[in-house]
Image 1 (cartoon, helix red, strand yellow):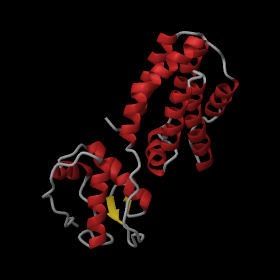
Image 2 (image 1 turned 180 degrees about the vertical axis):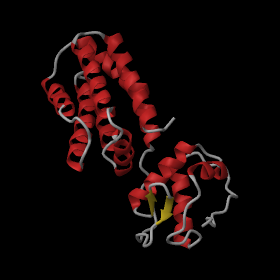
Image 3 (image 1 turned 60 degrees about the vertical axis):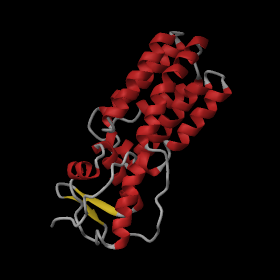
Amino acid sequence: MQSSLQTDFRPLQRYEQIAERLTADIRSGSLPPGERLPSERDLARSLDVSRASVREAIAALQVQGLVETRPGAGTFVSAQPPAGEALPHDASPSAVLEARALLEPAVAAQAARLGQRDDTAERLLEAMEGIAEPADADARAVWSSSDRLFHRQLAIMTGNPVLIAFADHVATLMDQPLWHRLRDDSIAPPGRIRIHAAEHRMIYEAIAGGDPEAASFYAAQHLQRVRRNMELN
């Protein structure tokens, strides 16, 4: 069944705007329960935005229970969309990753200038390395918490309260439902979680070994992979 979604949109840039427009169409009945949304490619073309922005918007609507994705069939308006008007204006995952890519390599380099090992960081690494594959919700929860706190701990290792405050804010953003959904999807393919764990280990060992250049390089490479695996390029 073809969607009744109109394509007379002005160019949009942020996923929140896309999600809000789709939410409005769902609430108004322009996209009725059970209606199939256009494909990601078609939505991106009609809205004049990137496919990454569309992907984030749809993920946000899934978190809200407004749409559901059926493997091999597409994305559909939920049969009984929940009541409510506004979508939370959380920071876009792509914006979070952009900020992290700018700052976290520098944080890792600064921590490496102190060149000290850290018991908390090592415990978090061991927790991540102990998960072979994210096979169930409990394993994903352990990974999610350990991942967030590991990156925060690197900032703590700098001893700089401003960097720690930045890391606290990022950790909060990484604990939001949209980030969880995209992150869980990104680590689902076999082997990916081991690669991420190995990259965390490389960052930490460079810091503990007092090598700022290597610490910065490994942090940058890791974040590039995270962004690529989340398909936010």
